[in-house]
Image 1 (cartoon, rainbow, N blue to C red):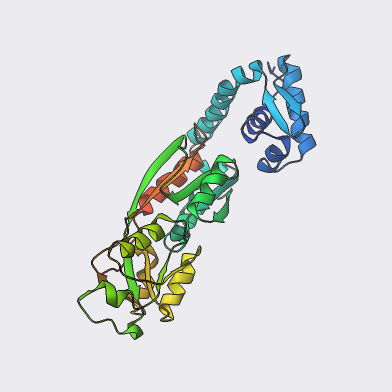
Image 2: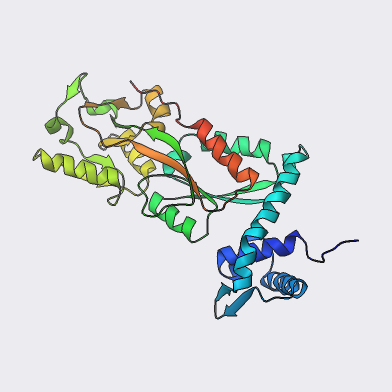
Length: 301
């Protein structure tokens, strides 16, 4: 005979409301309705005999009892995950992994990452967001994403942050621009438009500061979508400064060539970041897969 009339769905609802801050967002996260979430919380409170949350217009605050039960609730869910792992069949995990990635990841090892996740966790759907790193960080701390694979720097510290590796920037151009072999000077490089990251990125700021420091006039053409810079370089519209991971195909097919200019922006450092602790096994494995795939291969030089 069961000692309790609440189950894991009640505990999941409690944790999601606590983490998401509203019943609506918790319902979206658990793919159910807001009345369902409200009912589960009410049933849990009835069984425990204590009010766990104070509700007001649009927000939820945990009561002292709710705060006290938060970590034990997380431990219950973690124990359930451990139980599933112990069965030897991780394909039983179901749910959605809300993944945010930087554009460089999308242009390099995303397909392999998704294939490996599908093999390991066929019932976990990956809800993918591709955006600038600053926007990914905002979405992570707003609890709109579970995991981000993104480049530094960051203005907030995530609870969990795993360094994946670094990727180098390279100057590349279409062979049609006629760059000679050997080192290229600043004046020759700057005679073409420089295609690069968005204006608020560290790479753009470093490039602008570099040419200013040597008093070399330059035309910087920025884009929030690095794929546009890559395409413009392929079309011979300028010299691009892009992460090596994006250049493998174009360089191997000789549609782009490396331009040997002595200065480059700093390497891009990439991290897997998440807030939940302990992480469910499928999230931890997603981080492990990303770490294994990084750094991506690139046919440079």
